[in-house]
Image (cartoon, rainbow, N blue to C red):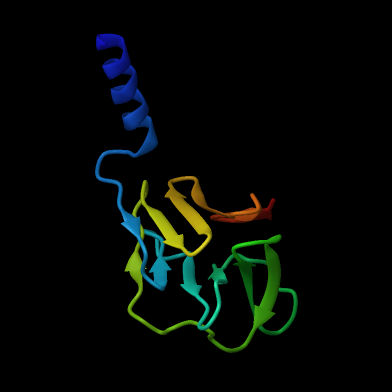
Length: 129
């Protein structure tokens, strides 16, 4: 009984850092202010941008993810989000949208969907998986 309780305490500590929050806001920003993400209106898609994303044309680059399928890298000149005040997602926090889970760490933002695909975005680096 004591061993089971100790294991539960250890696993609980690993699952969520002290003070970690789950954020469900439509518009978020990283603690550094460098990464901005938003939920796309009338969609389950999220999009994230940062000033260090490589330009692929004349518009603003972003990474996008839906609840199923692979992450995409594209550009746009408009803003498809809700336009709500951005909520800061602190290190250790999780941003959740329908079918998408993003974790903010000091090593960057990692988002994945129900298909196991996603992206990682950090200062000066990003990749899709």
